[in-house]
Each structure stands twice: as C-alpha cells, then as structure tokens.
Amino acid sequence: MFIVTDLCFCEYTDHGHCGILDPKTQTVDNDKTLEISAQQALVHARAGADMIAPSGMMDGIIHTLRTALDENGFENLPIMAYSTKFASAYYGPFRDVAESTPSFGDRRTYQMNPANRLEALEESLQDEKEGADILMVKPALAFMDVIRDIRNESNLPICAYNVSGEYAMLKHAGAAGLIDYERVMIETLTGFKRAGADLIITYHAKEACELLNKK
Image (tube, rainbow, N blue to C red; front, side):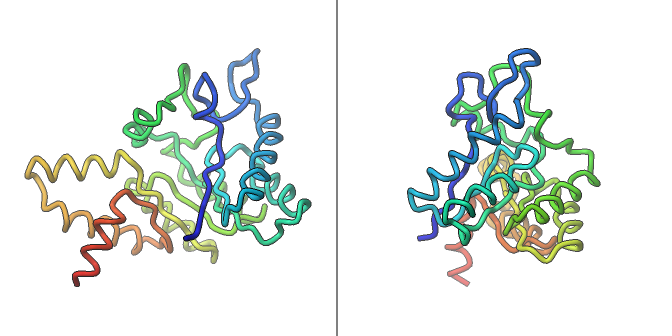
C-alpha cells in the first residue's frame, strides 16, 4: 500500500481555517503557517508517509516543504501539490462530515477564484518550479479546461480530485432514477482522463474498479 498524507490544519483548529490566524485581520498568516507546515511534514515523513500532499496550499508551501524534507534526509519523498485548488462550493458534503467548515469567513484568501483560469495555470507552474512532483486540480468536474491547460504546459503527472459534491450529485441523481448512474460515472471519470489527468482521486473508486474488472 502506498500512503499519501494530507497535510493541513483545518481539522485541528477551533476556527476551521487552514493555519495560524493573524489576530488583526482574522485571515491566515501565510508565513507562520508555512513554519508549522514544515514541522508537520517532518512528522509525516518520520511516521512513514510515501508521499505528502499539502492541501492548505499557502503561497510558497512547496518550496518550504521541499527544503525542510531535503535538509532532514527525505530528499526522495515526493510532494503532490494541491496546486490549483479552487474556493469551491463543491466541497460541502465533506466539510459537513469532517466538521471542517470555517466558523467565520471563507477560504478565498488562500484558495483560488473559480473564474480565474490564468491564475490557475500560473499557480500550478509555480509549484512545478518549487519542486512539486505531481500537480493537482481540485475540484475536477467543472474545471476540465484547467486540467487541459496545465497538461499543455507541463510534463509532470496531473491529478484530478473528484470531490464530495461532484460524487453526491451523481449518487442522488442515480437514486432518483434521473440518470444511468454507472454509465455517467464512467463517462465522468473518462472525461478527467481525456482532459489530461494521469491520476484521479474519487469516491467512485471501488465501484469504478468493479465495473472495469467485469469488462
């Protein structure tokens, strides 16, 4: 089994944000969060993680983690960057279950504007320069154009993260008899692959594997 760890602080804070807050602005202090993120990465590495995926995605986090890992003997431990992570409404079901919805405000100060296609591309290319081994687009369903943009500009592996809201829509539509759930699921996953994804993180994984094995 290959273990990838999610590096973030939102589930460990009483405010639900992804790092240390600046008391004056009540927004995440990017640089202070980078410091503790480096510490958390070393905890994961020493515990045996095969790959680290920092989902908070502060500015400069890939460079910070790569430096910390290299300086502590983990030069070969790969990093999967949440390089194009949008401030999206599609995360709703997961946040309800994980109780990680911010208690105030939102995450738009450190996640991306869904309308800004050019920034999405720039953020991923910047993470590649900082040492990322895999680039990610999250969510995936409404952002296949961004997956293709990055695929056209980078030779790194690209991961599409098919999130909880996307999964829930298909599940509910299937349960209501509105769609052929299995066919739509495979079409959706195929769309991610066609757009340029090399890896797909999805709640559909077990069902999709069972269907593909039958074929």
